[in-house]
Length: 345
Image (cartoon, rainbow, N blue to C red; front, side, top):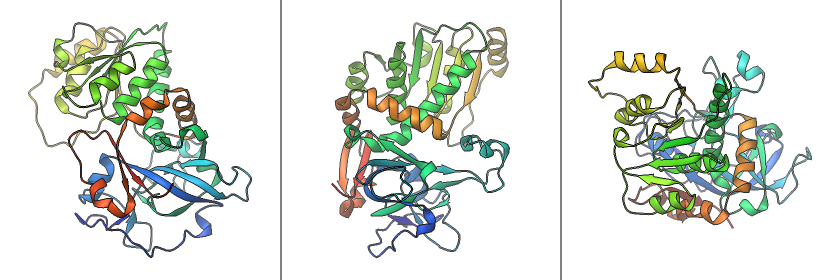
């Protein structure tokens, strides 16, 4: 699956795409499936994306799942399930990339499979360097492509807990805004921590309310301001400007707000910034943004998915589309949560 970056609606299936060159990595992988997310839709719309050096088209796909065909390094065995880490460190490298924290790259020269200067995983076969290959339990075969969004959530929780350790911290209540894949996985990891979880979304029908309740969490459709509690932790997963501001005001004393949704910009809201400043300062609250993940977070995500109810994870996948019908996969439908493009069995 390829696009010409910056050119809207240039998505096409290339059936004679060459085999992945050995310099991409020692581990040769047969693609099983890729998940599709908002990033893919924005690249297809021409908003961003960067092809690898020397070519004019970018292979899509950053939510990967494959089966190892060969690994002369001995890191994995033929037949093992594997996912590929999306971001690679910059070549300089910056201080963070130098120690494996490439999710926190400071100079912006990182590369990303299917997004920025590296071919993605939406192709029959791909290669990986061993340090960017994450082995998966065989039980995750139907849902392993969820590892990439789960790694984003694992990073968010890692940083929330590091910030919480600044003082005696005993969180009880979590609010997740948005019940898309990131929001639902954020709620999953919150329930795995034994916290009281609330999920807010505007959908009153479809699969989302039941998926939340199946976790033992509470589903809300009212505005944030009408909630009758002050959460200790908020994971904001919509990127909607009004919701972002509302959750910053709603968090309880010493609360932590993690922003994972990305706003599109271009919208002005009349807002009392002074009141927000006063609240954040006097209540010792923290608001921070989180994106991407490093190897530690991918491993944590793999553990979390292995512990989860597999039927619940499977319910997040609302459509599976064979690669030959790719146009349907990339055309959103109202009740979509996670759409998967299947390459093989």
